Length: 198
Image 1 (tube, one colour):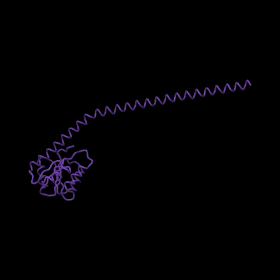
Image 2 (cartoon, rainbow, N blue to C red):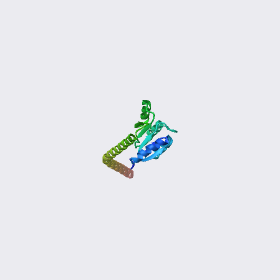
Image 3 (cartoon, rainbow, N blue to C red):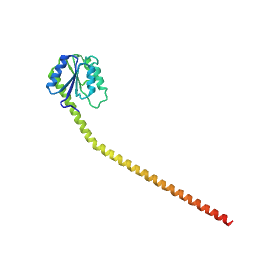
């Protein structure tokens, strides 16, 4: 669920760049958390409540590529957009960033307005995904409820049939046992009568 206002995490080891990005985003109404290295960045992501990550590629402790991969390897239902911001602008590094799991790639020096716009694009994308997800769940819930009710009714009917069959079998066995006992009693009586006549 997107926070209100949305929360952006800026993971950047250069203090001036980190403060610049933070100031740009705060001016646009975002809540901004910051981390000076990859380790602190991943810890903050694990804590939860982040809507978009602005991530430097070259970082101490955990570099941006490894951090991307760790985020993508988490077992989490909520998708977290990652915008990589770096001075490495060669096609090789762009490819590596996208392959690691980045959603967007901005090179330094960057235009502040463009970076803010890109953050806004991913926030809107997240909101659209949430809306779609909620609509799908709303459509599926009545069907799922009906399916559960049908399955429950079928299970109840099957249990009742099983009980009826068991009772019928027990009654049949009881009648058979009673019949056998009656036949045995008649046979004993005739045998006794026969001995008396002797």
